[in-house]
Amino acid sequence: STLQEWRPFNKTRVYMSDLESALHYSLRVELSGHISISGDDLIALKKYINVLAKYFPGRPSVKSALKTVDSWLTQQETEIKYSDFRDVLDNTVQTSDAVLPEGVQWVGCQGSQAHYRGYPCAVWTLFHVLTVQAREMGSSDPQEVLQAMRAYVSSFFGCRPCATHFEGMAQESMNHVTSLSAAVLWLWSRHNRVNNRLAGDLSEDPHFPKIQWPSPELCPSCHGLKRTGEHSWNQEEVMTFLRNYFSSSRILTDYLQ
Ligand code: FAD
Image (cartoon, rainbow, N blue to C red; front, top):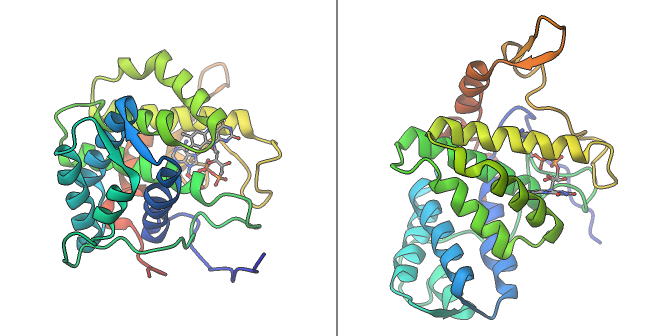
């Protein structure tokens, strides 16, 4: 394997390079394992691309590529070939400046070794950004982003045990989400459940231990104590923190291709 140069980064920020790399990996690697896509998988893909076309806070060229794919998909009825999807994504059909950069360049999602972090980290980051963006933009359906992610993970996410776990959490409580803020908090709290389950696991990067996030250093006001002395989250402060942390205006563009 090739040694990858370490890219210095700020651990308290979101990087567009991770988000674009997640899109590249999802749309050009993960999906390419499906020669043709139909039925529930096609419905899942349509929902996922639609949410990306609406809420991905990216560069104009990337947004434009997502919108092109979205409008092509709405015209497809029962089955698509992955190769046709790919042609539309890569613009061999129309010529314009709509392009999603090729390849991955992890920054905030770099691992201390190549097998750590990367894509799964960037998928979480992308999902959090989308729930926050849907809230800022005032989506009319509070579950729109969550249900699109749920469907994508169930149909396509390469880590199958992850998909099973995520579907279990979705079945348990995703239907109870009735506001855009509740959607942001639902994803945050389920991600913490996953962190809790994986803390100390072999998959954990020793340089990025799984914690209940955000840490007291990152957000002091998010943390409180009950009368019993037990830890408690201050959900209003967590909401304020997440809105700021994942806000489109704070995403750093260093290292973009
Ligand atoms: P990640 O957990 O990937 O988090 C990425 C970044 O998000 C962190 O660095 C931090 O900045 C931020 N963050 C952390 N916690 C939160 C939070 N609560 N809310 C908002 N932001 C936060 N792996 C398994 O082994 N088993 C599983 O069942 C499993 N299920 C998964 C389900 C899904 C939907 C996804 C996307 C991934 C799943 N994974 C699972 C992978 C695992 O959760 C991690 O993504 C992976 O181990 C890499 O961890 P990481 O240290 O980069 O941090």
